[in-house]
Length: 312
Image (cartoon, rainbow, N blue to C red; front, side):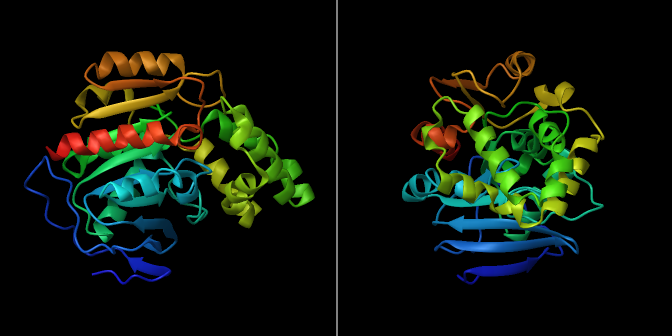
């Protein structure tokens, strides 16, 4: 059983736990009932930030490139109060996780890190909800390890074929200025502008929110720039698009109905509708890319509905 401490460092379990024999169940083993912030080491240079809240069947929330558990702060208590254990994971190079140089930042590699983290936490099967490009990580996880994903909810995430999103490429254009002027103030400014441009209603973008979103990227500007460059240059070993029809778990895709930056392109939405016709597509009116910020009640409802569906 994991201790309920403020911060823990965990090593990768030497063997994966046995697979759950009941596909309709969301299984957990010995996770802490109280909230805990963990540092999960899955390789010598690779440490992921993980937070665990509540007790019950497991729902995993994957943060996007600048997200963290903070991004899901309006959703986590709703899901925990509904009787779920909520595990948030920041993929490597994102949020509060490490930003090591010289490692593989492909989306396929990120999916394997999520799987390794679930192994370490002894989570056999979970509902996975992911934001932005992490939706592509979740889809790759479901394809590579279908017995581990009970259902999948992608929040403003399409079948991205590269980790280097347009937002990451725009950020790299400012790399010389960041290096020249120290970076932290500029990073906050770019994040502020990016959050506002990505929103249907930007009123939620306060200075406190900007500071919290900037915590991870501004801690080590050099490492952040190096990681962004590695993500932009990463080449996937296999394309996701041709495999979408093989996705097995129940799927739901949420996307903002207001004009906004970020999110899947129109051609990606067409691809998803054609490849996975049984999926639910939920348009959230007057909202943008950060649906868990602008419309957390709708995001919580869809995730809860999917979790309840696979538990029946």
